[in-house]
Image (cartoon, rainbow, N blue to C red; front, side):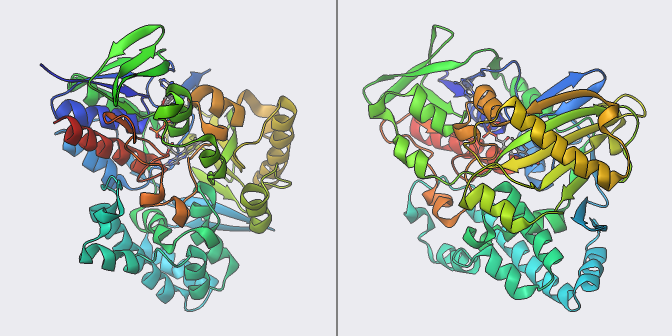
Length: 490
Ligand SMILES: Cc1cc2nc3c(=O)[nH]c(=O)nc-3n(C[C@H](O)[C@H](O)[C@H](O)COP(=O)(O)OP(=O)(O)OC[C@H]3O[C@@H](n4cnc5c(N)ncnc54)[C@H](O)[C@@H]3O)c2cc1C
């Protein structure tokens, strides 16, 4: 008899877990509360515009290749990738704009022009980051991190020291580079995705390697093409998806789970992989005696930012924007204070604008622009329509000044998405967008555990457990959880 596994949630981690389990011979049902698969990588279409709701940076293309190849498939069969060049544009304010080139030689030349001698330092920095990426991908991210002993062999201990776990990214960057713009270029992935560079292990320069060496790519048709491809793979393997099906309870018998209750119906299962937000599953779908952590544990966790997002359909084109645009024209330090040190609504936020219609004619009506504006804000804030409008006007003032043209009066469609929507749509703890901050205390074995301590056949997957936030790690998380389930049931 085929064993049956329920997967809760159909984000990257849920679909990935489902595929791996189905390949191992399990019957798999994915239960998803929303109208379609994708989780934070949802999509909506309006008036000829196609808006990706979440991720927009396609980094680490090797992980997507690995995923599709694991199932005898290829990326190309599902979407066509374009490497963006320049990768992105940064507005530093006062008329200073820097484009990050795709070519490493051009990047070295750019750094050298900003700070003499920095090309050599960048080469060294990226060589170290390449080593970390290689060891990380081969040795670290596929470990379930159940126990410290997983890292106890000599090769691993040596690797952990050379991976700079105990040096901060800030120290690493500041010791090599003096120019403020270079420092911002190297610290932004960490700032935007998770934590203060001074609290982030230099291990995370792997993000710089992903950014500057592996490049920024774009799947034509939009990021949702990845989800469509993954759902296709899953369905070919026999996985069943049920939408509009929010799980209300994980049912138990002694030290096992027997399945879940959703829409008033009992789904029996031999195992459950919970790929919805960990905190939601642990605190709301389980009885207190079966929870891995209590409320105070989650209160003490440092969350990566939430965001206020505006999806805009604009009539006509918008000048001066590339596909990805970062507005670093205000103080980084103040931004960091308002997100991490003293969480509150920001005075003058940094923000990011994506204009996928610069690369892809299918995401906007001919001649029009599709804009996605994201303002990182501290997790846990309560937004209101007035607050959203306040930030809309603020960023539009700066965007229009930068572009040198009117945009507001050409907006033909506008939708916002803010912390309260993250809670309502994804059951996100404190409205977080990208999970936990990447601090040392929240890395690897210190992350919320994949295995439930009380129910032997309940596992967690997704951005709040190992290996961490972002599309590629979430995808890997589902795969690792499926391997753990097979070890338990197999
Ligand atoms: C605005 C934004 C921009 C981002 N940009 C990038 C980027 O550019 N690049 C990148 O790599 N990463 C990016 N990320 C991060 C990335 O999107 C996430 O890390 C990843 O998608 C998380 O996947 P997941 O499977 O862990 O969770 P999710 O995608 O949240 O999936 C969990 C699913 O569980 C469902 N669910 C919740 N509760 C229940 C329930 N009770 N019953 C049934 N289903 C339930 C949810 O509806 C959801 O579909 C971004 C995230 C956001 C929000």
